[in-house]
Image 1 (cartoon, protein in one colour):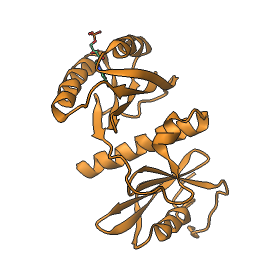
Image 2 (image 1 turned 180 degrees about the vertical axis):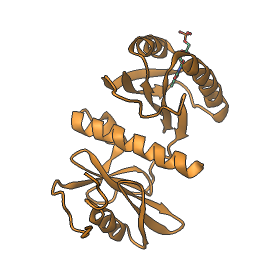
Image 3 (image 1 turned 90 degrees about the horizontal axis):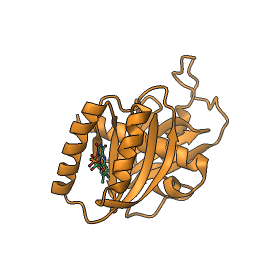
Length: 140
Length: 74
Ligand SMILES: Cc1cc2nc3c(=O)[nH]c(=O)nc-3n(C[C@H](O)[C@H](O)[C@H](O)COP(=O)(O)O)c2cc1C
């Protein structure tokens, strides 16, 4: 199954804190057959998780209880025919907060993600996943 | 034959993910994206193939939307 949630970091996550979190997550995910990506932007997390339903369910119980973040909000959850991030035990990117004005007629992916409109949320999830793939390819 | 014509009429919708990175979708499907780097707006089609570099975002958007329906093997 696949699941996407957002949350608010309890404290400022500097590189060292994030490295620790990622190292432990990747090791556990490799063991559990979980893949996905984690985005960090303006003190907030967005995480995509995919893997066996029972694993995702138990992982989410741990994640919800983790004091390093709060306001964990599941945005999307469902059966997945295939993995979108099979090669990432937990891909990570920090997303810079936009500073310039939104061009006229444009939507904001991060606003739509939390906006409550199901179509907008789904679209935003796809946009972020797409952005991640482009940036990951750039980094190669 | 690729004509450069808009073969799909669902409206194109643009979203900003971060400054300089804009994704275009139509009815939930990817149309392409624009990535601003080194002073130019680079346009890419749905397969992330470059379709040109432009001075303005508007020109890059036109190029992305113009790539719709091209190279689709369906
Ligand atoms: C933002 C965030 C993302 C996390 N992602 C994962 C993850 O992908 N995999 C994982 O095993 N733990 C992840 N964790 C850590 C879990 O919350 C938890 O610490 C870990 O699963 C150990 O849980 P346990 O003490 O209940 O065994 C994440 C924590 C945070 C705050």
